[in-house]
Amino acid sequence: MSEIHSIDLRAQYARIKPEIEAAIDRVISGGIFIMGQEGEAFEKEFAQFIGVSCAVGVASGTDALTLALKAANIGQGDEVITSAHTSGATITAILQSGALPVLVDIDPQTFTLDPTRIKSALTGRSRAVIPVHLYGLPADMVPIQEFASSYGFAVIEDCAQAHGAEYHGKKVGSLGSIGAFSFYPTKNLGAFGDAGMVVTDDPELAGRVLSLRQYGWKARNISEEIGINSRLDEIQAAVLRIKLGYLNRWNIRRIELAARYSELLTGLDLTMPVAPQGYQHVFHQYVIRTAERDQLKQYLADKGIQTQIHYPLPIHMQPAFSKFGRGEGSFPESERACKEVLSLPLYPEMSDDMLERVSDAIKTWFIR
Ligand SMILES: *Cc1c(COP(=O)(O)O)cnc(C)c1O
Image (cartoon, rainbow, N blue to C red; front, top):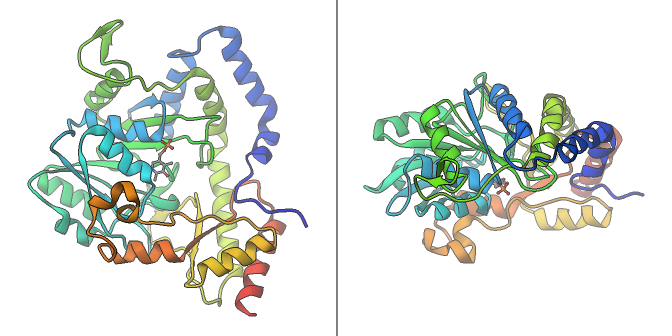
């Protein structure tokens, strides 16, 4: 039987090939590859999709977070509160800004920052909080925002896994002071390489990012402040414009597949993903938990079914980041999650039959 992969970007390309080829050809024939019409148009279209007034394209999701922090004047000597269960990219971005990460444990049901624990991370140097909308599920933003406004913090949303996810009717990215998106190829909206976007309703913050992403220029060749080079190129923007037109349909299909998994896996000794009332999960990943995760993963691999672990180690147990915790036991829910989570294959082009094959294999394993 054929293999079932975690994601299949070739299947996606096969369905939109003519449109993508035309878009790429338009860029190449036009001869403008950096800072042109495609990038500007994509910024406008993406801002409109999220429901904010400003969007600024950058070179990656990590840079989007870093530049969001810098635009909010966060850097050396400052602390940024975030989740102990996230991509290392979130932490890399904080460190790249010059600030230090201060970790908080997750809510084990939602895998997102537990708002009741934020206060324990507070020091005189705290300046911002980065909620991560992990796996496509929004973090619990109301208490996070209340906390942030009572202390005058910036809220910078890590939206890298949640393009189109909604929290009480508003899209993630429009909830905090700034939102940071990644268009890494495997995300819900993915480029053909690296790309990212900063979104905000604050024109001043957007202006800072515009300048910082290109050497701190206000006018061409005149650096007003110290910036970096982090631009979204025209080919990526043209590809992303085409794909943005499909994002809603793709997310709907992800939600449909997730519902089918939850239906077929009911009654087994595993925990399925939940979305609290008023949250629209967009299932970047469909993540189950089981104490026998490693054995199940191996069993599925033997059946030709690929799965992933997001993530195998919490932040504070990774060698580079160990100084941001007090060793094993610092963040017990994040540590337990990393031992139990398993991301099942899920992507919009996955067929119902493929999903049933995965579900059947899991059932067989649990009922063995
Ligand atoms: C992918 C990801 C990022 C970083 O995005 P890149 O484009 O790879 O730099 C940041 N945070 C989270 C949660 C991610 O999943």
